[in-house]
Amino acid sequence: MTPEKLLNYFDLIQSNKSILYHCNRYSKTLDGNEKVNIKDYPIGKGKIILNEQCPWHEFYYNPYFKKRYFDKIIHQIIDYRTPR
Image (cartoon, rainbow, N blue to C red):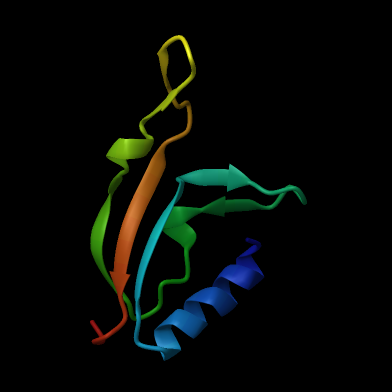
């Protein structure tokens, strides 16, 4: 998602007083050469409950052996039910 779409997405989640779980690469370059980093996500007034490297995405499998991902994959739980 572009930074603009991320802002709209997080605004919608916050307005619904929801809990968000996401699992993404720490940093990625989009098709339009925009860079998106988890540390720059517009979480607003959400409270981060979980923020760590995702253990089940640390490796991927092919038919012959287990390989480690090159990108750091982070998962987070963000609570918007109560303001921080």
